[in-house]
Image 1: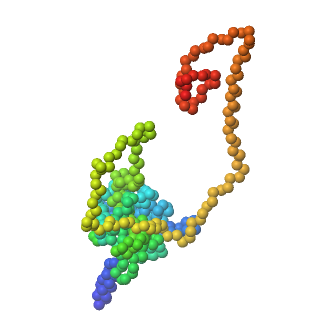
Image 2 (image 1 turned 60 degrees about the vertical axis):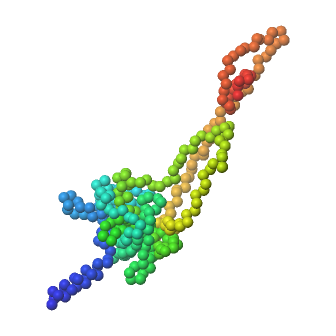
Image 3 (image 1 turned 90 degrees about the vertical axis):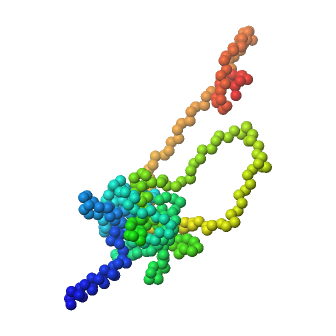
Length: 331
């Protein structure tokens, strides 16, 4: 009888934990300087030496930048990027294979596993991959209502760095930020994530650079040359409108709220120290003005000197030319 009760208890416990947060998501807690903050890191589940042990984590740089957590893995950061907001801990990303992690695509069913601030049990948030962001490597996930009727409410503080898994349990991305935008046919609630595959490729210097406006060199213009004439009668006709336009392309959320690690208190603003007794700024001395050239005195009894013919070297416009030299070639 006792064994039956124990077995039943074990079955109930397992079934109760079946929908709980993944063990690959670990809570991190930082404290220092009168502040406390929360975040999440995610196990890469890469086997260690000779297949023994699990090594390596991935998270976002704005979480791991807080230093060594008081609670959570103490692995050192091996590579990070603040702009793309990814961070690897406890493993050299050069030893990772990007092909081991699925690439997100629109319509992919996903689940976010993480720890909101002050939560020790974790939370699972369902979602669907929406579209990639114009600025790589980010992707957008449309968050869905939970099965128990809780409406999509976004990934609050502490969810930063949370694991994003596909239906097969493979790690796809980590959470970077919240996004809210009124887009028809959606829940208007989104999460901005960093795909693990792209983070590995960037860490290995094989990923796409951050999108920027291309600079196109223009040909030099010559105002003195008239532009070639145009002939409107030979211009191609404008394209005809599409009689059956397809569905409009999805647009990313317009309002983005970066999800920082949750803080108990606002960070103190440290003003720069006031400089006292600073030496006055002394302007450099100006060069003395050159004295004007005085003409040589002439005498009535002295015959005028013959004119001297010297080679005149033209000078560019605006350049200095000594006085007393008159020529037609100088400009």
